[in-house]
Every structure is written in C-alpha cells, then in structure tokens.
Image (cartoon, rainbow over all chains, first blue to last red; front, top):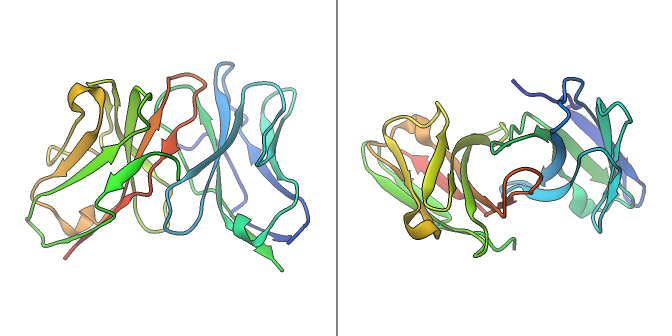
Length: 108
Length: 114
C-alpha cells in the first residue's frame, strides 16, 4: 500500500536539470518525504528528505508544495552517473515503503 | 561507501540449507533494519532493532527467518531450510534515530538458492 505515486520512467539530457515528481496526497502532518535512489545492483542511496520546507544539499533540491500533497526532486545538472531508480517515500516511522520508483535515464 | 557493511556479498546455497548473513552498521547508529529486494521490485521491510531489541517484524519474516543484534552492535539474519523463493538481495540499513532520520544502506547480500 504505497503512499506515493511516481511516473515509472523519465529521460533527461546530460547537463540539464532532472525534475522528478511525486504525489503523496494522503500524507499526514508528521510524515516526512524521503528520496532515495538505487543504481543497478547496489544498495539504495539516501538523497534528501523534508517535512514542510524546501530543502537543498550537495546532491539535490527537494520542493514540497504548500499543501504537502506533492513534491519534486531536482537534480540540477544531471550526469550519466545519475541514471538510477529514484524512490519517493513518505515515512513517519521505521519501515521505508519503497514502491516501484521512477527509472531515470540520463542520456548523452 | 555509506559505512554500513554486509558480509558475504554473494551466497549460493542449495535448497534446504541454512544461511547466515552479517551486517555491521555505522557505529553510532542505534537503529538497524533488514530489507529484502527481489528482481524488479523495490526493497521490502523485514525487521528492525533499536539497540539489541527487535521491535518490529514484517509478515514477510516467516518462522524460518531469525534476526539478532547482540549487544546492539552488528546484526545477523539467518534463514533456515532455504527455499528457492528466498532468492533475493538482502539489505541492511542503519540510522541514528527514529522520526526524521535517514537510513543508510549497505551494499546488500545477494542470495541464490538452487
């Protein structure tokens, strides 16, 4: 029972910004939005998380709408190494529910 | 490298054999999690520990599975009488705390049951 909806796949040209959307219309007030990615055959990699405010770190930016029902992960300058499955997860406890994620392909 | 290590990285075993996997979390992390990932699916939660206490188990964790975290440090996941359906990637993660803390994952142990 995934709490999020993501497009199954997206393409992005190398050097351009990759904007990955996520819908989480049933999010509760105390639930964080997390983003992870998984490159083939590796363990998931934490990217960023937020509760209400927009967040930025060295990897990405997270934009959360004011009603918190959706968010966008932004990779500002995508590289070929950003090709991966990206998971948007709504979490208030211990078990991350990964769902199917978005398969992002960055092309030269 | 996240600082979470798992051993072995790959394990091939015959159906009916027992296997044990080890996870070493980031040293100051008191929470440790086990997940399982089958081909084409996202990771699924199995169980988690706070220090040495196992606080939650998923319905995916049948009675053939047991996990321990003695002294709140490393953890082991044992599968008894393996079945072909147990073939999967077993992932370990650790975190500093509960609400609002990110989990850091190890590289996983790939289990193949023949």
